[in-house]
Image (cartoon, rainbow, N blue to C red):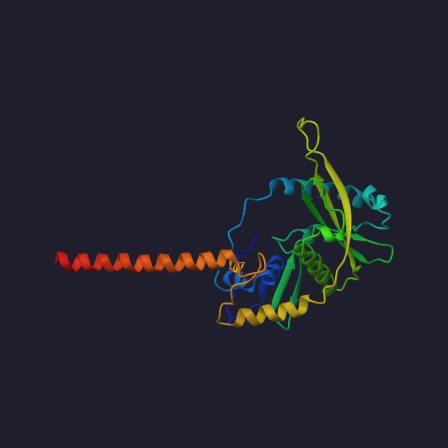
Length: 268
Ligand code: SF4
């Protein structure tokens, strides 16, 4: 059963569980991370990407066939990558973010970091290759490193860090299996066709541990971090809007309560 998310308690000696997506949230906006992890106020989540989930599931099944047979997937051969899907009894556990995923207790911060990886391959040097599946639908699909969002790169690097902390040799190059739904077909005909690309990314996990120390320091603090710049160069529009709206609503609420009290006094 999935454990209930809890907020950070500075007085607790228990390791605090942090998913890799929360580290990403912290990298994007410390204020959002504080609201979430310390105050229990989460960002509103958008609609779930059911089509992406279906693509993920189908890709997993396809790579699992090759995992079972110990063979390279044709995509690996197409890109000249010498690797096969890793056959390891812990694959399902590492993939399941809700149960445990790949996890590590970082003792200096007492943070317990975890996340569910999409896939792991292995090269002839016995290095693990971290793999992430991505789906989109664009006129020109992503095909190179510059097409990757920074959050995708951070995601890859956190997984590389997690596997290294678990004692595995990990290739510095991870791969994104990027599928692009083709919207230029002549007719829908009940099926969506995809182009599949393999995008290598040579990441560096050097930032992960310093980020954990920063995150811990923020969690221990009593001050909410400043409005961030996550969505564009200037101060975040959403937070500015939220604060302005909050102030107006509070003022209105005070005024209404005050008027109600006055009416009650007059009615006596
Ligand atoms: S600054 Fe933006 S991203 Fe950060 S907490 Fe406010 S709304 Fe969220």
